[in-house]
Length: 89
Image 1 (cartoon, rainbow, N blue to C red):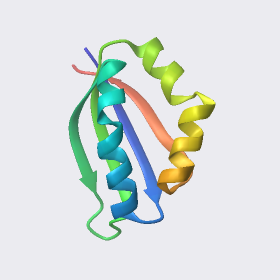
Image 2 (image 1 turned 180 degrees about the vertical axis):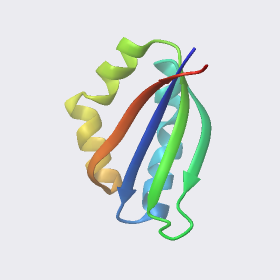
Image 3 (image 1 turned 90 degrees about the vertical axis):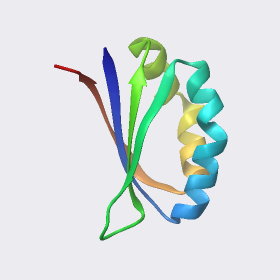
Image 4 (image 1 turned 60 degrees about the vertical axis):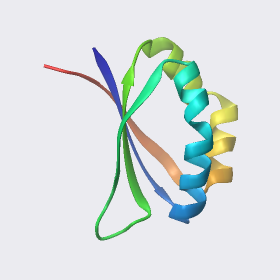
């Protein structure tokens, strides 16, 4: 089973979080299931997400599409998100 780790900094957590919640249906449509959302205790604008992944290639196509990049920008994501696909041992 594959998992996806995403870490990024956002300009305003509340603005980003509202956008994130609205996007959960889209994530589910491509086979991503939210496992956990984390915030850095020192910097609440530093966010980590963990998802279960059904289809890695479909997920990569979604994550690296120009539309996703624009959506991240509109949600206040700063810089390039750190994205790692993981395998559970």
